[in-house]
Length: 143
Image 1 (cartoon, one colour):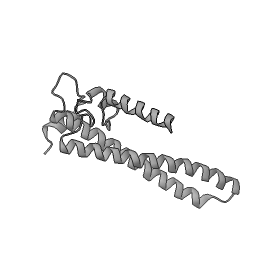
Image 2 (cartoon, one colour):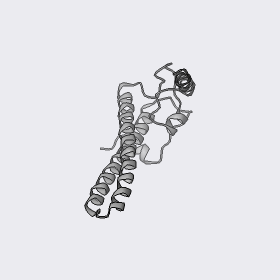
Image 3 (tube, one colour):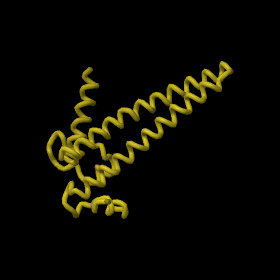
Image 4 (spheres, helix red, strand yellow):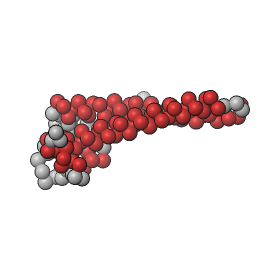
């Protein structure tokens, strides 16, 4: 049986600032968005692995091999970024489960619907993120 929130999400629901923050409907929306993103990343990774396997079987020329190795290194870096992103998606899904999703890990304030729409894995509100980035930049200068 399809629950009420899944049915509403299927009808092109988008959270708004007018409704209660992190309501069950919003949480279901973000869960679905995160799961879909995760599935897309996993599918892309599987596709990349298959392409790399096929290319290895076709290579005969040294120039082709060199080009393929460069291309494969790029693909592997991309896959590593996907792997890290999937970890962040999994962490966001855990936050949905434990009730902390949508709230800044530093201040406890609301992250905001628009920010979560743009970056559903966000863990900090804009102000805390900016402070964090300034501190990182200062540390790089000091080092």
